[in-house]
Image (cartoon, rainbow, N blue to C red):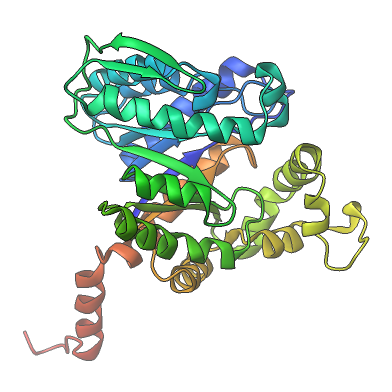
Length: 369
């Protein structure tokens, strides 16, 4: 299993924005130091909590502070932009990162973002289908692109700066039923990121990789489970009690003050019984209802193992992070996960464990040596 971060990132509206951005950049540096494989960061323009309007600019800065970790736009709200401009920006970023870029695309999520562009969910889904077709030709094709479609017009368009990579990886995100996003990923041979962003039922996530492979077989493309990433919330502390105490204030504030304002129906998702007052819902209930993975290293490993089995195997896990707790506590969680959870799924400490078992079975007795 490979591991990374899908960073929103979340900052309280009361926080200093410059310091928030700096802490996010330090998080990318730490992720590389701890051996994480990927770091994705997204685009938002409104709402007051997620403050990166251009993931390309953020990742350009991060690329100069790192050398190994792969960097992903998670995601560019593609329908808000001209595809030629997107292609030029990601091509430049691929050079700045020396070929570490992955391009994540999505239709956008925040309703207030949509109002800025006079967009709707259905309109943006139409646009992203058309845009991906254009982007693939611009980034990977060998001929100038002329396109006169429903939403975009290009005449003899050509990238003078081609991507650093011969094939720039492109991903599409989804958090709903396996339908339009799966179709899009399969048709255009894309990676797919399934996000447990807002209490997505496990049964829905379980359908995604199988549906992706089924549709890929239909189109004759090679994408599939190996190109599928699952993103969910994870927090680790020395003890399970400490883990819940650490995130209690921040996670409850995130769920009750942000999510339920953005998507009021979520208050019903959080309930244990119909009409349960929001004030009565605590962190333990939120974690259970939203499928968050919270606890000490042993508990987190057990929950992740159960999650892994329930979806038929995870090759790439992305931890959704940022905003629940002070930066130093989030760093501690990153460290504990890398130090004590990741080795169980990578097998990197298998030899050490067996060596210790052999020592226990055959202890040295004084006089033997």
